[in-house]
Image 1 (cartoon, rainbow, N blue to C red):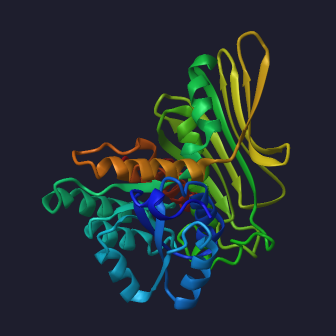
Image 2 (cartoon, rainbow, N blue to C red):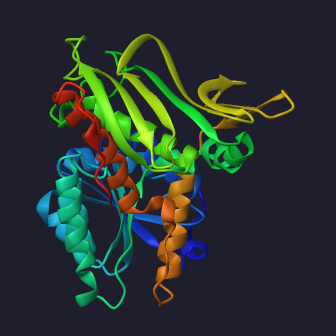
Image 3 (spheres, rainbow, N blue to C red):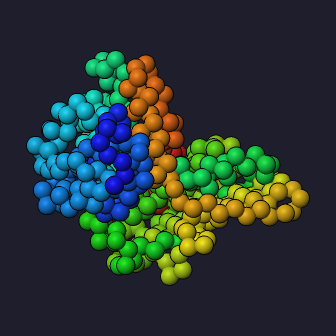
Length: 364
């Protein structure tokens, strides 16, 4: 058991709202790793059975975890003054509504990606959220859980981007593995989501791109297709994009491929940076290749730890916010950042619906 009794009495308490695949396989294991920083007081699901099953997975490090379910369970979480923060890990179609409900109740929220179904939903939600100062002395934190912004591979690669000189072009190649062996393949909400897996998965790759280049995407021109009938449409997209700094790039994304590959590559006048998904010594992560002016290629492997890091950042922020004053939360977790990822994918899908007509990305 990871700690217990009085040594954890002063730790912040959070609730997990959602008991689906990602909550069970990522949130609970990652929260176990930071049990010395935060107490999981409750877990909620629509049904009692689902809530109890998820709670048992966390019982070893959260022995007093409470099961909550249904509307009554949500009301209990909102009314529990000991719960400072809530992780919203639900179907994409309902996350914004529930996040706002928790925020209105004064809870800090970390919401899973995608930020919204559309930029319209995100704009409306931000308008509501930004009206909160009238209700609260200090707005509750609304964080967006985009783990790619916390992966060390992207954090460190961003530091090297100036060393490659002026950007000449950018490539993002995603050949995914969303087939029947993937636990998310039969996810009903993703299949009914606007943009399907392209939007749900794609926000990760756009987040990685924006994090790496440090320049916003201004315009896109795209063609999408529906080839694999086992997947919702569209299942692949090719997009030409232009950054605000003038550099052009390509974004090529197939939801399912026989030979999975995921990489980001930026070519500059003085060198090249490439970030590629891979495995090293049995650990999954990213291989970063950096070629400088001297022609030497440096290779560094960074294991995955983004979910762990984003949760630690959220816990740190809610602790600091509890001390009073208008604490500035970690900018990488900003809900606005997640909305910007959605805006890029939405523009790409809009362009493809118009046979590749250039589309401006909505600004947040």
